[in-house]
Length: 183
View: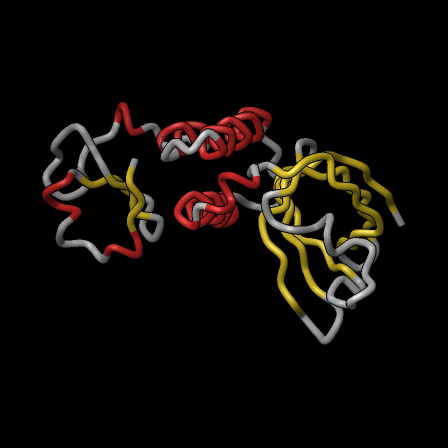
């Protein structure tokens, strides 16, 4: 059994049984990890409030038949109460975390991506529409040097999560909207 202690951003929390779940955390030292949590959905759970999406946490994880979170302490909420009251900004922040979760692999730490996620969430906190271009650059998909997948035009305005390509505004009209994010 190996124990790790690191800082992380809670990306999502999923129920796996009546009381147990899996928490996805993007950590500063290990990248994204998915860890089991025992009893997190019990009404008296000590960890539940700490392991909410959009929380910056100090987390202790053990590796024994996979990863399990044994302890967590919220450092701060990454979205202010004022920004959370705006459903638009709250949704944007959750969409950003979902995008990071979809676009990253377990155990691929990236300090630049870590800092960019925090910076982008801070922009949302100040009620600014987030720019995915910084996140995409940190992931290695620079919109600056890209061209439209269909017509080869520049500049690109949209990124497709499904096929990981860029589109101009004109060609994006023909693509399914749920696949695209505004760069």
